[in-house]
Amino acid sequence: MPYTLAGELSEGISAFPRQTEPFLESECRLWLDLVYAAEPAHRVQTLDIRAPLRRSALTSVENTRMAPQGSAPASAHATTPTRVLAPPHAPDYEAPHPAIIWIHGGRWMRGSGKRFSPGLEKGGLPASFLRAGLAVITPEVRHLAESPIQDQVKDTQATIRYIRANADRYDIDPHRIVIAGYSSGGHLAALAAMLSVEDLGGVSGEYADTSAAVSAVVDWYGPTDLTQLRSMTPADDPLSPYTHFGPDSWDDTALSPLHWVKRGLPPFFIAHGSDDLVVPPVQSRLLRDRLQAHGVPVTHIERPGGHDFSNSESVPGVITATLDFLRTVL
Image (cartoon, rainbow, N blue to C red; front, top):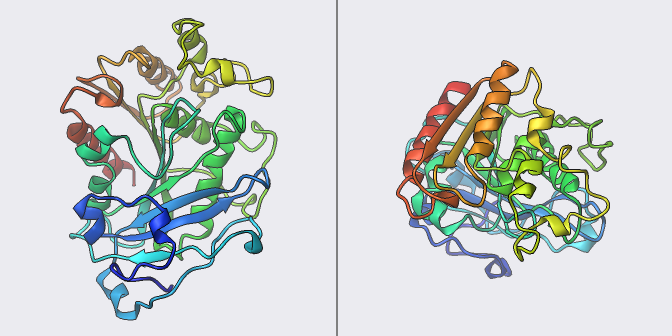
């Protein structure tokens, strides 16, 4: 696998937002803007992969560019610049590494996998997961202006399939993939773990036959009961996503993870700010109780802070608890 050394950035790489956290500039390798899905054809979904680096990988570094992967026609996209950065500290996990796929928030209407919420980045996301030896994948998913929420779930599952099918390329263990998300991304992560191909009306694409199963789910303050949440949202709220759901969207019940809980789901880790006024903490408690009733292993914590654990110092502790959970299931 060819790479580009840090400091020898390929032409065009500056078009992507640069992480400023020193850890990411010195302790991981980074594949940027890889094509992983192209549904519909006019809207290509991409992802970034940050992986801990084995020291031996530096012996064969080349200054080159990598062709994009996925179902999109090669002619439609320029080659994707990649780079390798310096080795990490000793990780908790040896290569091939487990992977955690983080789905961004943004009320299903906005947001990007390019950046985490500032408070989460400051608290150690994704650096703490990389230091622990996990590869971190951050995909782009479609927004409500483009597609209904169930298609965002398809994008999330497409990421899992792509990573599993290309695990050797990225030094990832295909049997240890975790789906995670915060806010609306937590909602999508939960649904991606719960919904089958049949539930979604089928899937297509290059990796349609690859499993989208995951080893665990990490849900940070994601909505779980949209019927209840909509009833708490003023109809004239300019930030309300519900006016954008559109005629093709499933109804609130079908879009609620509570509706899809069943026996046999992977273990869940759920975290919520006790002062969250955007997604009230009762939403996570409802999911915890429903999972427990169906015999699904679940760890649930509440910590001080609002949405994104804002106005608190809770993020590092939540990350520590999340990593402790992952060590028990991976």
